[in-house]
Image 1 (tube, rainbow, N blue to C red):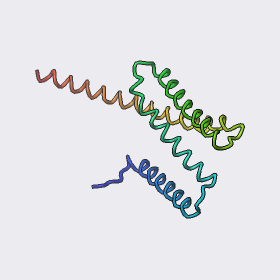
Image 2: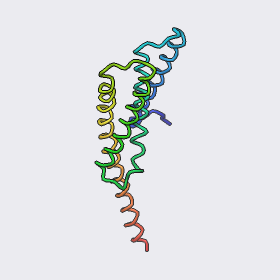
Image 3: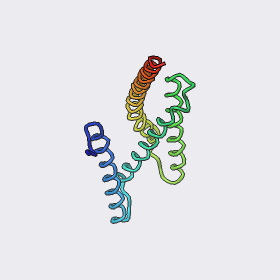
Image 4: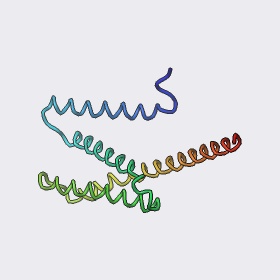
Length: 144
């Protein structure tokens, strides 16, 4: 039995890379007893990745809306979380004057690329499931 196949090699590489990167970063922070800006960015992008995936995974809660409206609602919610978090952080650390813009862009570009890929894959999966249901119904009527 093969655990790594052509279909799952990319996700396995991505998960392995993420686990190794985060583990090494945590190890460096423990050894050096301080966090540098690069390490902070690594954790920030991990948090932003988690936020994006969680937001996209909640699409089924907005199915009553059109796909475009759903995407806008999800994006607006994610940006609101980011900006509120940044505003909260500004009470503890100084935020660069362009920090809000930079944070929004740092999230938005990868988010929209991921959202496009996600919704295309979702649409293809729905078509596949609909075709499977049609075949089941067709075969069922043949036996009745």
